[in-house]
Length: 265
Ligand code: 13P
Figure: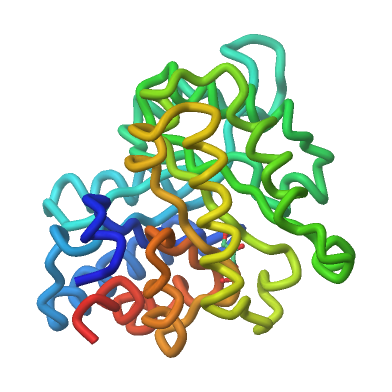
C-alpha cells in the first residue's frame, strides 16, 4: 500500500497528454490503456487514474470511458477565466463540466511560460473549475534558476498562497495540487524522491497553516516531472506525495499502466 493511502488519501496518477494525439489516436490509446490495466489486474481503490487530454479528444474519450465503464476518468488541460461570450478560441468551465470532465489542469508551467499566466490567473481558473463542479489540478513549481539559488521552497509556497486565494478550506481539501519543478519536465532530469517529498511536505504544512489541518490532511499533492515506471515507486514513497502528473510516459499505454499500478511493486 502506498504511504499516502495510510494517511487516508487515494493516490491520483494522471496522464497529461499535452498537445499530442488526435481524437482517433486518443481512442486507440484509451482502449490500449484499459486492456493493459486489466492485464495488470488494476485496482482503482489502490490508485485512481485519469487521462488529461486535448479539448478535441474529450468527447471521444468520454464516450469510450463512460460507454465501456473503463476504470479511469478524464479531464482537460486548461480552461477560460470567463464564463461565456466574445473570447474567441476559449473553452469555458461549464462546457467542460457538460462533457463530464472530472479534472481540469490549471497553471501548468507551459501555460505560465508560453501564455504568461500568473498566479492570479491560475487562481481565477481554479475558482471557475470548482464553481462548475469539477476538481482542479493546480500546478506550481520553480524554474532552474530558483532551484540553483536554493529558494525553491519559499518560492513554491508563494505560488501556493497565490493560487489558493479565496478558496474555502473544504475546496482546498477537495483539490489537487501538482508540484512540477520546471527543470524536471520533459528533460529526463527527475527530482530525487527527497526533493519531491521536501516540497510536497512544505506545501501540506502551508495548507495546514492557511486552511487548517483537515484541509491539509485531505488535499492531494502530486509530483510531476519525468515520472517513469522505473522511478515512480521511489517517488511515491514520500508520505506527502499523493500521486503523479505524468507527461511523456503517459503516451505509452504499457508504461503508463505500470506507473498507475506502482502500488503492486
Ligand atoms: P514529463 O513527464 O514529460 O516530464 O512532463 C511532466 C508534465 O509536465 C506533466 O504535466
